Amino acid sequence: MSMNNKFTKGLILSCMILMNPAVLCAQDFSMGEDERGAELQVREVYTVQAEPPAIEPPKNKNIKKSFVTLTLENDMFGSGSDQNYTNGLRIGWFDLKSKPPGWNDDLQRYLPFLKTNETTSTFYSLGQNMYTPEAVESSQQDPNDRPWAGFLYGSVGMASLIGEHVDEYEVTLGIVGPWALGEKAQKEVHNLVDSTNPNGWDNQLKNEPGVMLSWQRRWPGYFEMPLDDEGLSFGFTPHAGFTVGNVYTYANAGGAFVLSSHEARWVDKPFQPRPAMPGTGFFVPALKEEGSRYEWELFAGGEVRVIAQNIFLDGNTFRDSHSVDKRYFVADLSAGASLIYDHVRVSYVSVYRTREFKGQDEPSVFGGISVGFNF
Image (cartoon, rainbow, N blue to C red):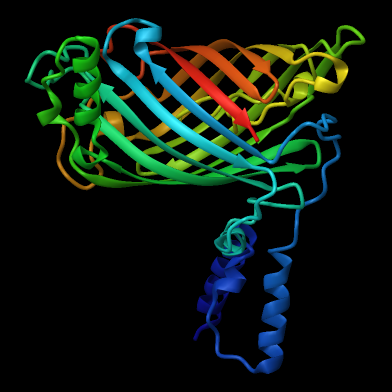
């Protein structure tokens, strides 16, 4: 091998290691026992836990270990018309005491920024989204409007309090197309409420497996102002993250203002179908020992996304299908409120989403209702 080739290969390997040190752990070299022992030491480096939290967790002693949240989003709560993102249903379970699954260490070796520590909690969710063009009564696909599509999915993720921020990552697996049962679900609901029959589902995207990896960082308590001695407070929590996959690929950044009757930094929005403002479904129960069984929260915020892939606009990845020209920059503005009684939280949020594709007549407006239980 020439010196030039050695230098080139060494440079490439060095770049790979600098970009992802866990590449060392992925190599299958022939080695002796001493070398294998050294390799095991290298592996341990990348499964070491992240730094402990530098901010104090919620003080409420009434917090139980599990949170279950049911979220329904629909455009009847907003524009009142069936078009664009027309319906989303998601149920999530957030478990404060669960340990990360066994494959977490393997994933961390290749993606070392996915850190965990003793505060790490696991969350799971199941959901279904539906997307339709404006003319739902037509059996023909409008060439200038978005495709018909359904998405049925499940996900597992982890949230960790690390230093002064909360890191979340989520792996989502699902199916786009007829197997997502979007047609059946929408027709059943429309029959139930005596609404216009959606006739264009024969034009929907074809069956395709969907995979996404999402990562998000939030800074709770980035700004917090106590307003009285009873717990009333005002705060701002910024966030940033990304999602990669064949369903969505985008980078996002935003933040939320909160006015709350208790610690504003721990006001976490309910589970919402992606793309959306972050939320795990965690909430602080009402403080019964202080004589009050009610708490309330008001929140408003926004998020900007730079989008590289949106299968619901770009069409199927590996097969021919209808598509439209997406916009690469999309923003959400949202506002809502929550009422907590004992260990139950009821929330409503309204979302304004800018135009997602060229030729879209108007922005999307939809709302979401969530009910969460802490037990």
